[in-house]
Structure formats: structure tokens, C-alpha cells
Image (cartoon, rainbow, N blue to C red; front, top):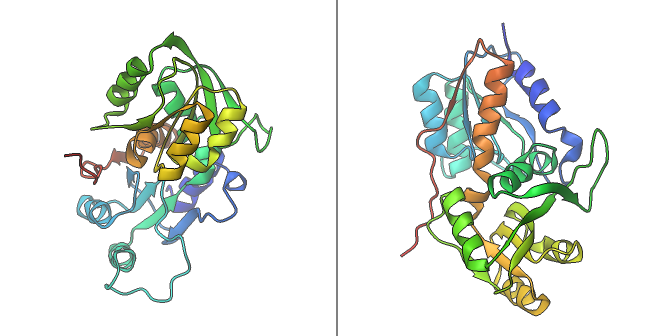
Length: 260
């Protein structure tokens, strides 16, 4: 019998908890380590429709990148989506595991996958936070054949499936840094590493101005689209390690933001 605890132990080999940021909340956030598992639903977020999808399918576990609980809760009621999700999961005996910033930083995690998907070569960790079992940290960088920014923008949009991009810059693209999700605050690390282009998400007004001043191309490809590629990787790793378990990627979770 495979249990939630077995899946958690495996997830900790993919994304060791010590690689997370200090403020983060990862691991088993709802449920029981002793719960037996036959079906796992994998998604980027544990939003209410995803939790309902898991219940409708009969899953005993959801595995996500973003966590169900980030801040201490004062109440678990149906007045909030988090409360409704927790209640729904508990009613159906579903546990919830997440790997967030530890999966961003881990080798073969979110940012390695993003770099690979965008065609970066000679991928390296920018400003490693540790070196065991190999260099790990938040950002990745790599080379692409020199090309106009417009061509690279087309590659980003196509390979990530974005409906649109926000960007600043007009430099030729050669050395690219990537950081899935909200990594705009890491702009200086990308610039200090010698990158002419940085792909991330959730960029603020002043960060675009800062990139313009630094002379670096800054591309906002959206939080969902820069991180969602890891979902298929997670599902494949879990299915390979536990062939006796049915593993499915959420069929309903999509980007919420639209472009007019």
C-alpha cells in the first residue's frame, strides 16, 4: 500500500525542503501521512475547482506547486476560498502536498524546465544558494543563438502558450536569465551575471523602468505560463516512481488572466 507519506518522501527528494525560501510553506499542508493513495491529481494551484476535480475523480491526494496555506489561518470557514478548499478536501479524505520555492530552486525544477523550454543552452544557476548535491538556487541562465528581440519574443510566446507578453528593451538576445513566477526583484542578479535578457513574471512598473535604465531586455510572460510547464514534469516523475498509482494532470486549471 502506497501512502501520502510515501509520496511526500519522494517529493522531498525532487525538491528538498531545505531549498525553500524562509517565508515559504511547503510539504503536507492538509490530510494524513497514513492515508492510502490510488489516485493523484497534479496541478499548479490548489484552487477550489481543482479540489473539486480531485474529489469528483476520486483522488486521495493533490500535488501542486503553490501551497494551500501561506499565512497562518485564524479560521477555516466557507467565507474564504482557502477555507472552502480545506473543508472540501477534508470531507473527501483528500490530502494536499506542495513543493513551491524549493521546486523553483531545485535541480530539474521549475526554472530548469523553463530554461529548457525556451531553448537555452549551457544552463547554469545564477548566484547559487548551495552546491550539494549540485549547484542550486533560484535563477537560471543560458545562451541562445544571437537573434533580434522580436524573434525571441515570438519563441517565448509560442513555447509557453502565452496570449500576450509585456516587455521592455530592444537589444539583441544572446544570454538569457529565467525565473518562473514573481522574480522581478532578482533583476540585478540577472544583470550582474551578464545577461542581456530576463524572462519572468509579475513585473512592477518601476522594475520595467529599472530594466530600461540598465539596458536589459525584461519580459513578463505571466506567472501561470512561466511555472505551469513543471506540472507535466511532476506528474511524469510521480507516475514513474509509483506505477501502481493513477496520476492525472488537472484538466480544468487554466490561466485566469485574459488579454483584450
